[in-house]
Amino acid sequence: MNNYTQEPQRREVNASVGLNAFLTRMYGIMTLAVLVSAATAYLSMTAFRTTLMLFAAQHTGMIWLILLLPIALSMGVSFSATRNPAGAFLMLMLTAIIYGFEFALIAGAFTTANIAAAFVSSSAVFITMAFYGTVTKRDLTRAGSHAMAALIALIIATIVNMFLRSAAITYIFSYIAVIIFVVLTAWDAQKMKAIYVNYGHEVSMTGLAIQGALQLYLDFVNLFIQFLQIFGMSNRD
Image (tube, rainbow, N blue to C red; front, side):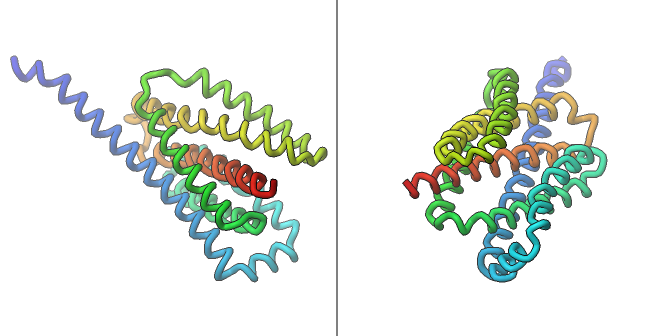
């Protein structure tokens, strides 16, 4: 009799343990990607600064390739994560390295204080929203869908502003982008939790964790870039 009454509780505990293991792995991989980007950026701005600047000056075409390559790698991670976790992990780390190089290239336009303030701000916002997205019972699907639509509109408007070159519009867009990625961070955190709960037993947990780590890493990177833009332009004023 007691065996039957305890069985549902056992299944619930096992599911909770599995979910915690998944979340730990996902956020651990995401944190590793951020650290790899930070280390790459630091080394590029210190030990390899002269080499990097010389390369950027002599190979302007390669710079465009470096800017576009993370997009292709991100798509590769998304498509291969559950089929080939090891390959997806390597692509994610390569993406983090390339973003580190990109951060180093743009860091010259900002002060150390700007970079530190942007990193602390983006970290605080990311941790808060990822935690909220993980624990909240509220369905964030509608908010996330609206945020994705707003992001697409913002990308189009940003491309237009590249021709207008309005600093004021860029400044305003940075605040809008922060709001968008605040929502997306919470939504992605909730979405990956739901995907694991519903399909985690059908696919590789590591692969799913890598896929979620990529989404959250990109959310963090975009938050950092927008905060960097905000702090940098605020100081110039």
